Length: 406
Image (cartoon, rainbow, N blue to C red; front, side, top):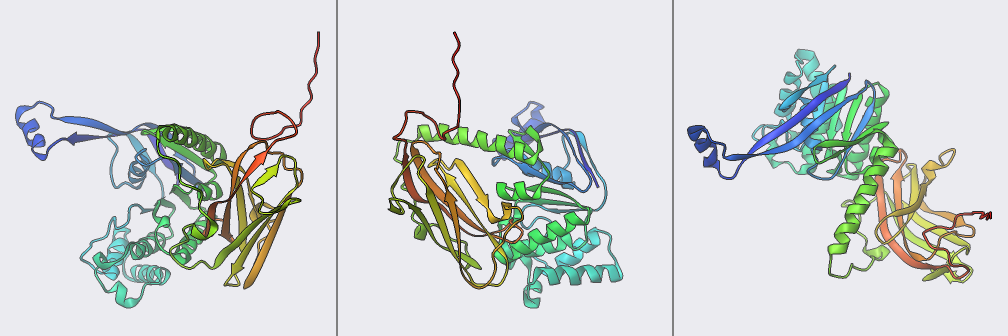
């Protein structure tokens, strides 16, 4: 159940015009340029491990996952796979658009070598998990929405109880209910000892799901190891890139959105953020806070279901750089909330040790696993901190002692 990448390289010949391929064959002179999608990739995903792949768009992550799944081969190098592999790559991959959902599921079962009763059991489990109506499953899949595609593809990929599951960003598509159901399925497979190769731009999910991760940059493995260290290195790179791009922007940055204007999920959340209130001795929601002043944050939410959920928040800078963040899930022990109705979480920061600067808040409501975001409000309640007691510079006050010697 391991996946072994040994000195993987993948290159593509890119032609400026379709006819250049023919002229190259006739003249025996190159009319193409070589695009290197991956080079020097060499690592192993251990059996039973949940391994994350992160990186910006175009870095080579999807190409590496396709090689891992066996849908394409490397130009050089070798990939070794053990056990039954199921892959959920780009939406619609492996489906015949003219055939029905039922027929496509049968095709997938046949590709995995299932026959007779085993095939029928596969079809029953896949269709039941997808929650798609019979009428929908009898239609050609070319009529499906992206969310329906994801339901069918994920259900079919996991119905075989794979030894290795490869997931490429597909869980970002679809409604919140099925996203949560899919994440729970991944956790269930992980508990059974399956190896999971998980690619996502959702760094919170990567941190929560994966024991190790690799950061792919320009086709190379930039960093590999424990998830927190790799994700932190990638975030630092993104901050530097963001700062560089920001310096090139001439137009003024847009104002931070109010809570009511923040984009909500496409479906009504089961738990909705109502309000965030900050309070100091000077009043409620102050525009200015002094360094070392006591600050209390109150987050109000309203739940429309009986399920357990967590509340998380982060104090951030205008460039989205996190200063501090935590969640009820991170408490020891975790302290989820539950029940229909209004809920409130209060957090007190005694003698807030931040120095002068502009700050905002991010607020998140998460499911009981802490993986699925049910509602969110980012860059809200901006305020300024002024350090009027001393002249130290930086982001935060650190207790220190100075000694001099002559």
